[in-house]
Amino acid sequence: PAEKMSASNGFMVQEKKFAHGSNYDIIEMDRMRKMTAENMTYSKHISPHVTSFVEADVTNIVIWRNKNKTAFENQYGEKLTFTPIFVMAIAKALREMPMMNISVEGDKILIKKDINVGVAVAMPDDNLIVPVIRNADRFNLIGLTAAVNDLAHRARNRKLKPDDLDGGTYTISNVGTFGNVLGTPIIMQP
Image (cartoon, rainbow, N blue to C red; front, side, top):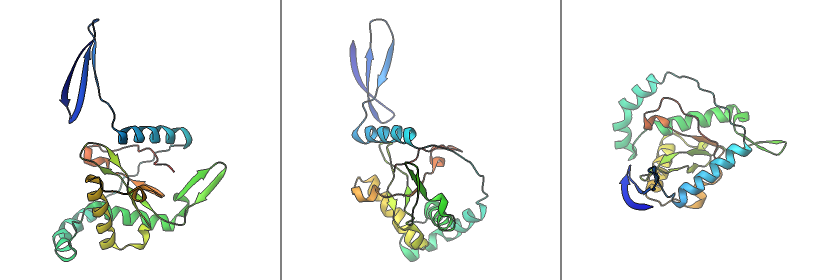
């Protein structure tokens, strides 16, 4: 087969043409994509996945954040996005409803005492990584904003340590950044 390399969607694509006239593109997965694919396939195999969508009117949150983001950044030196606001709401909900902060091990349900929220971060190379804010329920909005910004910055610059990715008990992801309205994430194990 004839081969040529070309750039497509930010990836190096190897195009192979075969004598019978068909062709396709091959994208070699980097190490992170391979690990993600293996972990997500494993997760679907061992964990029941149920998705439920609830619509919430966050108009007041949007208005409040837009009104306060400049003053917040001036006072605390941190950009205020919606992510720490949602992490704070999730951490509070998990504290109030501990049966949402569980995992299953064999025939036992493990109720997690720590609330460690994983925050999905899109990388410049289109990979996705999930660093963890440990004990998220113990932070105020300023602390959560600093933690989210720090993890996102280090993730995008490939400066995360293995401990930054370990111990999550609940994960959030924002599929809206891709123009989606809904998404069905796969549970990040364990």
